[in-house]
Image (cartoon, rainbow, N blue to C red; front, top):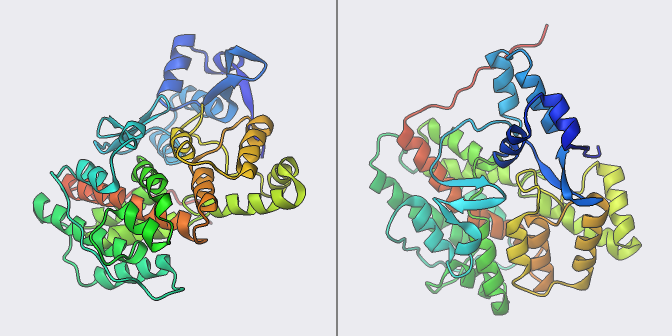
Amino acid sequence: MKTLWITAEDALSQLGTKPQTLYANVSRGRIRAKPDPLDARRSLYQADDVRRLAERHAGRPRTSAVAAETIRWGDPILSTTISSIADGRLSYRGHGAVELSVAADLEEVAALLWQTPAISLQASKATAAGGSRLASAFLTLAARVTEDLPALGRAPQALRAEAADVLSAVAAALAPWPQPLPLHERLARGWARPEAAEPIRKALVLTAEHELNVSAFAARVTASSGAALSASVLSGLAALTGPRHGGAWFSVTQLVERANMVGVREAIRGMLSSEGAVRAFGHRLYPKGDPRAVAIMASFDAPPLYGQLADAGKELLGEPANVDFALSALAATFELPDEAPMAIFALARTVGWLAHAMEQVESGHLIRPRARYSGE
């Protein structure tokens, strides 16, 4: 289904508010906006967001209706000090993620998000040739779940020590290397592409955390039960594999394959017609473009086809390339294995899941919403 955009006049008419209120809702992420391609001085506003907000304000709906809307890209439902997305900027505990990606590595980001001076990870032996690293990560975490202590009732310092141990275990599966090197170096050397280390480092930093996304919420729900930290990471990893989350990179690969056969414009048109969306472009939280994608793509020279796709996507869809596109381009540029984008994403996001799990445990709250029965 095509996304509909409306003018400020139409939006204000539906909302019945002043322009200042409209701009405030945009800055808070409640209404998406983008420049008008016909007049750079004006903006267009996402019709569904405007309608949702207008309906909410009409007659002050019941709490149950507000709650139902909240979990569908609605208002924030959990307080966190881990990260924020505002005005097109991603921050980790108040530090801009793009700025951090200039020099920091994933281990330093983990120390920042976990609020600990530093972390130390163990090296690991290489996995069997040809084996799936993602499958190995699942098996590693599943084996730990019944062995690790529940997270509930343990001191913060104990949880942080266990978080480092869990990250070491995930890294042993996703970035096996016998020497104690930084994780981005372990990935690059394990794939026999040492020249890819710098772009991989940047990608790891920029995908480590992203507010209350699907996998982070899954990790927090699990943590709220008091389960082990490894169980929370296992929940996050399972959610990450979905095609509307971390698995979106596969859609980018399919788009590239189509573009090789029929051209970039026809490939985009075909995917839009068959699937109703082209997941390589746009992000609801970044109406002016995904800054993570921009930073990652600037760290290497992507194949010409990717540049052509990015230009065509912006022209035909009005949306710039997103982080899934950037990870796919990174893998294609350095001829990394097929599962490399997911491996990079999963290793990085493990840091964020552990931060969310520990914050949820320390809050002492159980996440248990009520259901509204609508059957016979």
